[in-house]
Length: 177
Image 1 (tube, rainbow, N blue to C red):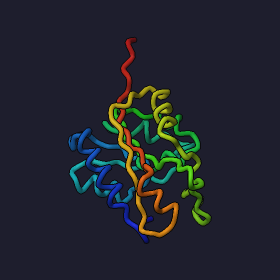
Image 2: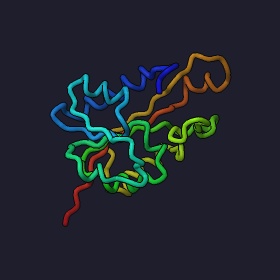
Image 3: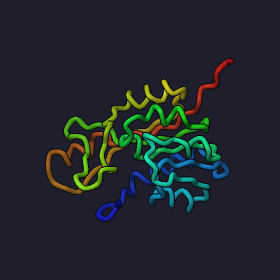
Image 4: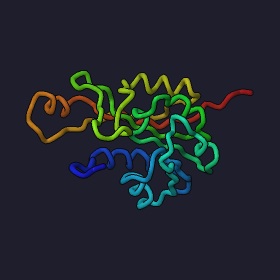
């Protein structure tokens, strides 16, 4: 996955944001198979459960059967056809989600060799906010950040100034019923 690049800046910002809102005593259900960031969470004292590679668009049973306090989805919601259904099946009252933002100067990402590595959604920040609110969550904290690349050109220059990632912490809205 990170054969050529390792997103240190993104991982550091995400870890600091996680530590700000989530205690190490809380069990995390991390959407997606074990990955470099889930290992970072474990290395920092978090108990992490990952999905097993099932197609989350069609099978959300793990969201209902696992025991967890916090739901995380880092760089995965853009790959889902229906992220709303996933959010409806989350048992936890706390969620952290990060997405790459839609960039006006770059088309949607699509791997030509890996069917799983494609972006179905290229979100703007307000779209993720709306999705979370519709699913019954209230955003408590959010951060946007850039992702500069070490290349020459107009688009690489824009990446120094244009936010590329959006990270949110939200909590389930308690009903009065």
